[in-house]
Amino acid sequence: MTRDRIRSSVDRHTPAAGSIKTPLPGVELFRVVAPFERIPGIYAPSVCAIVAGEKVIHIEDSIRVLNEDHYVCATLPTPTLADVRRASPESPLLGVLIQLDTNTMSRLVLETQVAYGTLPAGDGPTAGFDTAVRDDGFDVALANLLELLDDPPAAQVLGEGRLREMLFAVLRGEAGDRLRSDFGGAPALATTLAHVHAHVSEEFSIDALARRAGMSRAVFDRQFKAATLLSPLQYIKALRLNEASMLIARGESVGVAATAVGYTNSSQFSREFRRKFGTSPRDWAREARVLT
Image 1 (cartoon, one colour):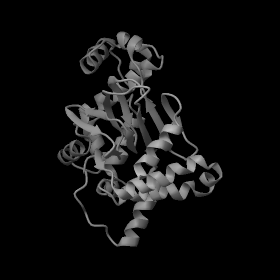
Image 2 (cartoon, one colour):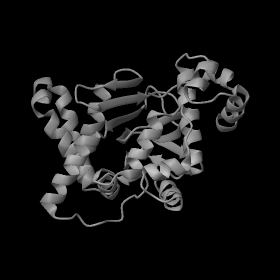
Image 3 (cartoon, one colour):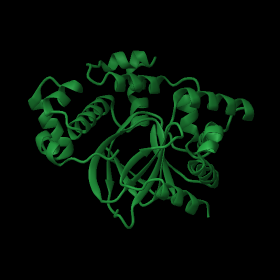
Image 4 (cartoon, rainbow, N blue to C red):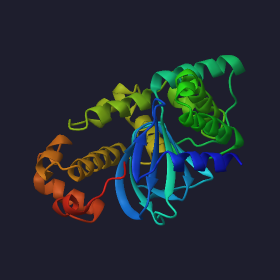
């Protein structure tokens, strides 16, 4: 079975817990062997498939369940919290993460539109972070991509083509509408969010961000929340706190982490950190674990 091949490949190539980069550009595999709750992260534009187990993603009050029947398609940088409720060395959670390169995706969207004419709009997800159903095309393309890990010379020769095949399968699947929207020539919101992500420590005027996106404030607010499930202010705060939490977990001091994401008031940072994560930054420094 195709899914058995996929699961076996990820299992063989992740001998220990954690995340590993593969020789295939932008492709990572990961293994989780213990449950965890409310671990912060920031999904860069990517496709993430769980091939064994289940992961729960929280975006403020919204929940997405990522399992063997669904994958995540993130076209916008998205701050999240994640739970894995069941995992052990004997029954690990296994997954694949494929980065979405803007230039590659823009070319692929254009080539696909030329080949098909205009692909019809479907009922796929419209948010910049959502789950989609794994169809046969997705599974076959993923299995073909991962089998190259057992043949390094073939990976050098065929890797780029197999990766395009994988992304083409996503483009033709349930997540295709969002990919065409964000990589199809008018990615105003995507580029604006990328700017926020790259300058997270700076002060932002929402009106200025709306002008950057070429929208009125009302349209910007509406489209922003439709894409990210958050208001602009909620998104910026969540992005900063998630970035800070990961810096602290990697060994930075609380003060350095707070400053790095734009907080100048340590008391405000501590209050907002506790409100989001249910613990103080210093306790987090002792206890937090990072899912990479």
